[in-house]
Length: 86
Image 1 (spheres, rainbow, N blue to C red):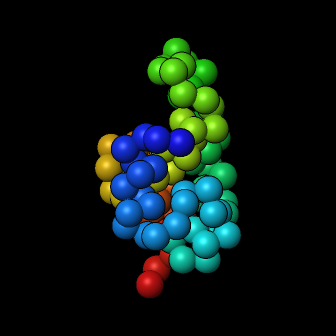
Image 2: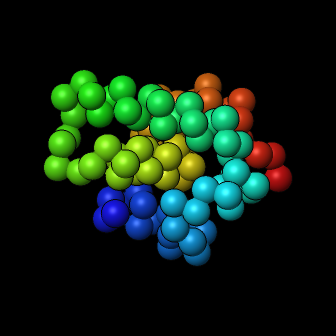
């Protein structure tokens, strides 16, 4: 997985975006991640970029939300409800 969001996530947090148990415990709940993944699958199916797998598309969107990039605007309701407050 080579998207800019995924690479930047690893640089910032020091682990891969696929390590979901770490994300669930410190960034956003499992329910929040599941909702973001559901929305990304729908977006992927609407004719968006097919040069990446559906899995990479979903993880890239999750990373974008966590990093506060464009996808956070779209998924702001999910982020605000399910982010883990530190």
